[in-house]
Amino acid sequence: MDKAILTCALTGVLTNPKQHPVPVTPAQMAAEARAAFEAGASCMHVHLRMQEEGLGHMPSWDPDVAETIIDAIRAACPGVIINLTTGVMGKDISGPAECIRRVRPEIAACNAGSLNYLKIKEDGNWAWPPMIFDNQVSKVQAFLDVMEETGTHPEFECFDVGIVRSVGMFVKAGMLKPGMGNAEYNFVMGVASGMPCDNDLLALLPRWIVPGAVWQTTLIGRSEIWPVHQKTAELGGMLRTGLEDTFYLPNGDRARGNGDLIEELARCARNAGREIATPDEARSLLGLQPRGENHVHTPARAGAAP
Image (cartoon, rainbow, N blue to C red):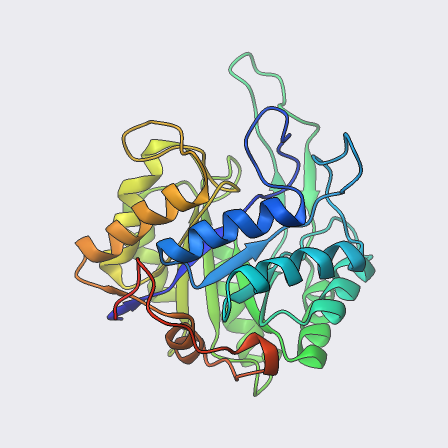
């Protein structure tokens, strides 16, 4: 594809803001989103944090928090596409479901399969207690039902090759309803127990997506992720980065914020001969329908083609 959609993953989950410069408050989230928007990001992937003093490292599923943060981002970035996280352990999806209903994002993450979520230290001890990130088909369907209700487009998060292949089965089974946009895959690479961040593997993955689908990569790591971002751009994938995924620029320096990271991502797209999609162009590529206050025509930005 000639146009590249840039997504900024603003803050992530559990990273302690006292140790790393991740945004937490509505004002911080809006400022980081604006910097990324000006650098070319059309889409903001949003995690929500508790707003109480000392709890900014903990996730929140309070719809009031969701509304305040999303309103601040939309005000700072007119016309931006909101992509809301949904990832929870267990069967109870009421928290993310109510947040989706409150803010009606144009896109929401839809984790498409289960994974043993593991990380081990050099000394052989677990970095955290082994856990299962459970996303059985009934849970995926429950999220898709909420997204259909709110007119939200699902972005299928794929942590392993079998999960990529499962999305094709979801589409064949009719779980992606008409009006929910084109099938969209997010290849998540770099989780220790999932797909490695590897150019050779990346080159194989698009053969297992459904015809007409859009795909992007989420690459987790340090400076070693940037050659894979470049490969994504060259293969026609969409591009995502942000403080959720990395703190590091291609030269190994720490990024000052999300704007620095999106500038580098835009450079990857341009190196591949691709232009940066505006929000309106991104909507068209994803098959999204204009919706009220979410759809505001935006002028060209620094990272976007005029």
